[in-house]
Image 1 (cartoon, rainbow, N blue to C red):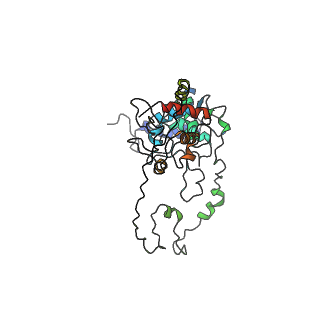
Image 2 (image 1 turned 180 degrees about the horizontal axis):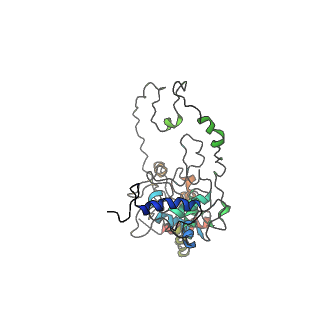
Image 3 (image 1 turned 90 degrees about the vertical axis):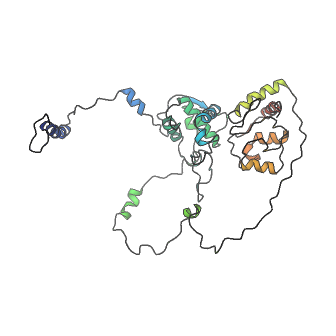
Length: 352
């Protein structure tokens, strides 16, 4: 039984009194006696947003190479080692020049208009399942690596609260103000059409791209023609002039190889990672590492009989994307000839 007397409505009198008093207190501007004022540190914990002009950025910095290591450890499981995406997880890199295509690839580099959105989202929501576990410097570094993966900055770039506005995203001018309330809402506010509203039905381009709409213009599928697969001849070994076993040059090459270690391993016990083991790579035919699943770009090199001699290695290391067109590697290449010579000497010191 209720401990409070009931009024004519059947509600306890105290409950009814409170229900009548709350709106009156609110209208009078009085306090309801609920809760307390938020503490400054509690407000700061939620006040994480970063604006396009850099407002809200904390002090800190991070370079591309550090970002690659942090990305590999925390992000690559979903977004791929080169930010190209895994399965249906989002691609963060690529898609440049595709926004006008029928099926555009929208990534950080091709679509996002502001770098602040990248920093804010990584800081607030990533890594998945462990949000806000990265330090400010790690967020700067990961953001720098994502920019590098989209070929927007060089490998020696350092992102910080001081250099943040130096980066301009390619699609910064690709958005317009939403003016539908002024220009279109009036069109939708009239009486809806219920009969004979459209004279004809047109197949949309989007449906064609998804391959869910039959193409009635084609009477029948063409008969399949058996084509004999051309088997590429086994490449003949090409003599490779091994770099001089200069300990100093090899030591320099080991330093340069730090840029490759997040994807490739060498030495005893080396295993394939997102890139193949590089033991014995100098002088070996391209695409021939055991138990590694190569991309189509490297399969094409293998079919063409490419061998990693000094000339091909130099060309590849200086510009991987031009040498192996379509490669998923985010590494943009080495700019200095001495770095290429050093890393070649270093790799030559590891046999199969």
